[in-house]
Image (cartoon, rainbow, N blue to C red):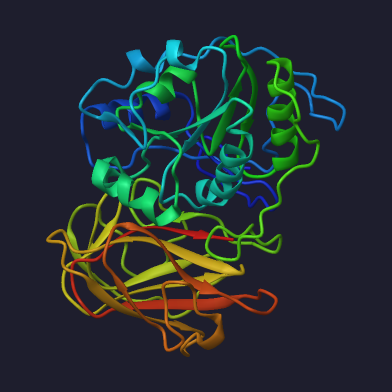
Length: 387
């Protein structure tokens, strides 16, 4: 579990991101003011069920967590909008059971939650469930409505999504996590809340119970199963590497022999050796609060990791020009261990800002050294995530 001082341990079965305390207030202000820097301190929490009571097969002892805020009063500013739906309000949702899912599209924790949310939206639509995604951004590029709309198309998300780039809905719910699910009953009361990945059967049984309370019949007792094999596949329990940021605001375990200098172009040298979860830069980079930007090619990043999957949040050059790259594992092309965004020979290309799956190991995870070389300048590197 992470702490306010930035120390981190690794969780295994349940994962989430948390924004807390004064850091959240500062971060929300930064988003509201349009700053393009990442100022959120995030905690990884091993146990992710924060609901009041645990849902049993025969029913869930639900709590009450206040009333659902009226979204019509929140989705109004230039930083908010609706996708896949006309504007929704308390009046239009009256008498419905509502699932509100907070997420952001470059967050692997959120992406692993999406298949379940999609399945519930389809399975219980006719019984009166309304699913609403609230897209609250982590990085600056996630504030763009066009980027969010493209992510919805890529993920085949068809339920209503509110763009919450000003954090208005986030703050109204008092939320601190990606992902976070709130279930609202037909009277507008928040009856259940769950933060992070996992406990999907419990969350679905809560939905079933509240639909029955609302008068819906024919609700089957079974729960959906996710058979996702792609980037949304459940995380491996053998993961021993934590999320790691390239931007100086939250970076840890940087071991290039050249000290990281904020907001200044600097030629970095790769470290001669790496211990587990250490990383370094090679080439001319300018490291900002959110991301490192490669000033001229070639440029490299190395990371010693232990997990099935390695992801890196990347963006193309500021001009939009794609950036080509090659990756290696222990100095060789990844072969069968390549990710969804990498060929077996290690080649790939950054075309839009998002999370890229670069490695998926087919065998049991072990300590490996990952290296990515960018053939073109301008790439923006934000964060490593694992699974």
